[in-house]
Length: 207
Length: 191
Length: 198
Image (cartoon, rainbow over all chains, first blue to last red):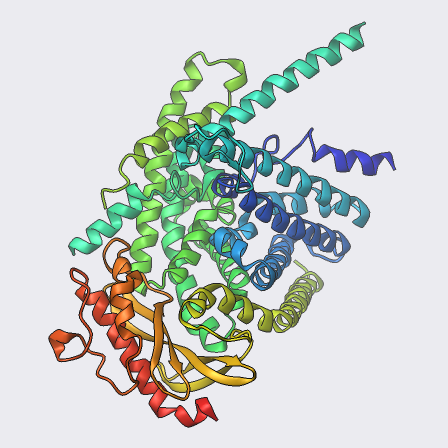
């Protein structure tokens, strides 16, 4: 049981993608211009991650080692196509906003990374929990970054105006260049916070 | 001819695939730490990007569209790219061992380089013809190489410079990329 | 590598690909209708709303498809016809046609009043004209409004070409694309009138 909790929570802080587990940055930078698209892409990634982790774990004993990457890719690509079709059918507006970034989930290193590093060695339950944790962590990170960029950049959150009326927005943050700087800033802040936490832990242990 | 020049310039610099369109950021952050690996990665990318784009374009036109299977484009392209990368690896190993030694370790990384897949998909979405698609693939890969080498040359200095501990590694790389991206962004509106 | 290993590799890959392919085909079939509805709803409905009036049904649901020609590759070209009804009676039909513009095809949605057979209005659906030049023409009420009230058998060429439409100054190519689209739309209407109204 404790193992399950551990595998779930590691995705939420200790190895939170993409901040700690720096993979799948392309889509992170591109879709965080608005919270809506960030949440949309996060949802897609959660679905693909769960599907690929569970299937890979189920099939882990019969997939020959030499062709495993090919099998993983086929499974992941199928998941992505399901997301593509479902989004077109039920969230067409979101599908248009995300555009090329939905098919690009297929090359999101996070998904392949979890299949290769975790799901192919662990039981189905653990693989599912890992996928949930990592997926939710990824969505959270995207949402945080997108909130930051949307609020500072245009003064809205989820399209609702949240800043005082005199606030004109700071378009730099919405521009591609701002994305890199924002993400770099968050990574630096996370470094500071975790260094502090580590120091506290060590103090506690010493005392 | 002038049109092509403008088209290429736009793909190489103004709409730089890496800094403006965010395709291929993972290898960018991963290998821009040193100049040698940046050059190796850049060369491997140009090579594979052009090959992959031409192959994917043909798969789309001659297999998927006649069969009405456009919806499995994602699956077909990624399988084509993965197989192509494997094939290139094997061929290079046999035919040109020195080149293989130089590029070999970057090839497996390329399968999950979003740029290769992204360019192949973009070409289909923008309904480009074969020649245009190949020119676009070459130009974007060239733009990727320029950005990668630029970044690597800056980040090499970081190794000897004194930067705050919290910024070491990824944060400084990303912030530098942001500043470089800003200079590329200044050219938007040229074409 | 033993024969057994190779065999298992091939079998596993083939089975996984087969199952995935089958699964995707099922999902595709399940969602096909919904996707088509969503596409029309999002891309065509704004244009439909702009040109149709006084109806009480959902034209996106009340639609039929007609094969109206063949393209260069010999594939069938389909035209979707939308019906605006009031009290169950058809008061207008709307459909889309294309004309070559500055940057590819310009799509124009046009509505024809039934039974008078006069144009009720036209609106641009898809185009990649320069927003500040051709785009302005295709959204201009002055230019697009000229088509309203014209009979389906009128000459829709630009006045410079002997027709009844004044081009939008500065955007001749885009204006011409719109007239071409309407002309070809009217051809389709006249040719397939019995199918459309039947």
